[in-house]
Structure formats: C-alpha cells, structure tokens
Length: 117
Image (cartoon, rainbow, N blue to C red; front, side):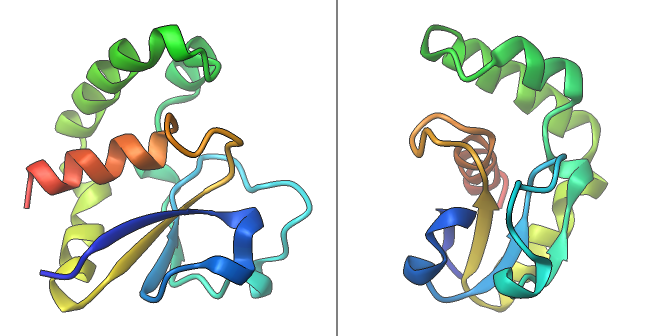
C-alpha cells in the first residue's frame, strides 16, 4: 500500500511524488487545472458545504469537525474508495487549498483513509 500524503495546491513546487487528487468541494482560487497535474477532482469526498461552513477552520472545532466528517465518509464509501484503490498502486497526494496545513479536511481524510485501509 502506497503512502498517502497531503499538500497545499499553492505549494506546487514542493508537492510530494504520487498520483494527485484534489479533495476540495470548491476549486481553489487562482489555480489552473493544468498546473496541478491531477488525476481527478473528487468533490464528493470533501466535507459537505454545511459542515465546511460550520467548521470555518476554527481550531476549537477541529476534533468535532473530524468526528462529523468521518460520519459523512462512513455514509459515502463510494466517494473515498477510489483513493484507497489508487493507494494500493502507489503513493497518493491529497491536494487542499486551506491555509492551515495541520487542521483541514485533507488531513482528516488522510487519517480516515489510514484507519480504513
């Protein structure tokens, strides 16, 4: 099983090697698709709009966000199964747009996928 990395789309020069997937519901501002070299844009694996707005990148809501997001992922395995399949073939990079590199949906997704391999 390949490693699952997370990387910010705006750090294109420092992206780790692997198959790249954008895991955001909204396309990141100022980024062209061809510049990312992504395999796919998996909108449906991202948190719901309601959950994303509720979280608002508030560090105090991080643990509850992770719990709620995991529940959404539990209800939609078809959304994240392509990432598990890709990771079986080699390293995968989950691309995100948030400023906070430690508390964002891609980090929560990586941890969720690691627990569900």
